[in-house]
Image 1 (spheres, rainbow, N blue to C red):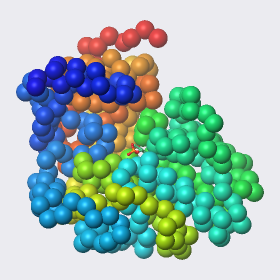
Image 2 (tube, rainbow, N blue to C red; image 1 turned 90 degrees about the vertical axis):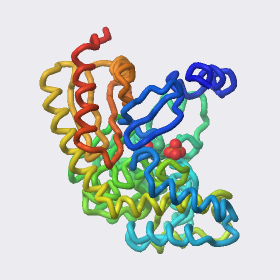
Image 3 (tube, protein in one colour; image 1 turned 180 degrees about the vertical axis):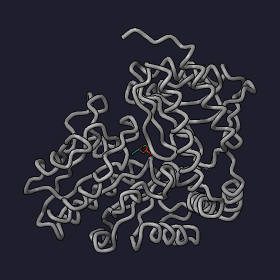
Amino acid sequence: MNNSEIVQLAHRHMVDIYGCLPIAFVRGHGAYLYDADGKRYLDFFCGLAVTSLGHGHPRVVRAIKEQAEKLTHVSNVFHTEPMARLVERLSTLFGNGRVFLGNSGAEANEAAIKLARRWGHRDGGGRFEIIATLGSFHGRTLATLTATGQEKYHQGFQPLVPGFKLVPFNDVKAIERAIGPETVAIMLEPIQGEGGVVVPHPDFLKEVRELCDRRKLLLILDEVQVGVGRTGRFFGHEHSGIKPDIATLAKALGGGVPIGAMVAREEIASAFTPGSHGTTFGGNPIACAASLAVLDALEEERIVENAAEVGGYMMERLRDIATKFSRVAEVRGRGMIIGVVLRHEARPVVDACLREHLLVNGTAGNVLRLLPPLNLTREEADAGLSIIERVLESTPVPRA
Ligand SMILES: *Cc1c(COP(=O)(O)O)cnc(C)c1O
């Protein structure tokens, strides 16, 4: 099928929720994707921060193939070696945690929310309320949607789940003021991704950690977007030198295969007991094998270091480019999550990049979000940045 045949067929039959671009991809290699008409695109989008090792990374492909030939699924009633090895690795990366495996970011966060409530019932005097932040994104299930501090995602889904409070991000005093007798946890992204690549001030997470310790609250960090190396460290919170009580991962964890994980400190995780939570596909051997290959590649191929280096280089060059264009308000981010904040809607710039065969994302209205593969080379970075520069030069600034 060619590009437009695929696009039309999908449009006729899919629930209309994604506002897809009219491109159908058939294969990928490294930082490049190829559409059904054979056109090549440089990928600074990575399927929303998922394919962080690029497309078709040999280690991940081999792991998936070998596992598929051996065993696809057995359920959580039994064990498999890939699952056992993965929970061990994630526990170690977190530092002595207990791991729940699911299939997505929302599901990992849902588990974190449920665990916080269970812990509140057992050890927290019945407290259940979770404080989350405005501009956040935690997923599309009802509870994670409620924790998501963006009105547009709530529209038409009320009544939402009780027991959540939203306060401004990057404002410890606002969090402190919001704490009530029922509050059990604070839930945050180390950097807000969908919210526009919002990087909090350097001491924010440390201050929140101290606040949680003082008031006996759990700190839940949603690392679904920034975890697995994107910021130049495995976890985004490592830059702050603190540890959360519960962390969630998904997106890049499976190198493109669906998987999500919640890791919690041992004494909190024990609030979950046999039967209190679960999911049929959790710990799926193919997903776990893919994830182990991702972790091996990150460790053995200097990929996280590369994300810090090339990401830093990109940010520097973008800041340089930005000085030439009054339409750019700010360049912000960390490692390989970069936001170019525009003084106008990002959409025309995103579309123009696409016409130049560069995939980028627009979020929060006016933010051009770059999520390149963590193993991007400087040459590939330069190729993409030149396109962005050219597009900023040639695309008319839309009227407000
Ligand atoms: C994408 C995302 C989610 C939701 O993940 P899904 O896999 O789409 O359910 C949750 N939190 C953050 C920070 C995300 O970026």
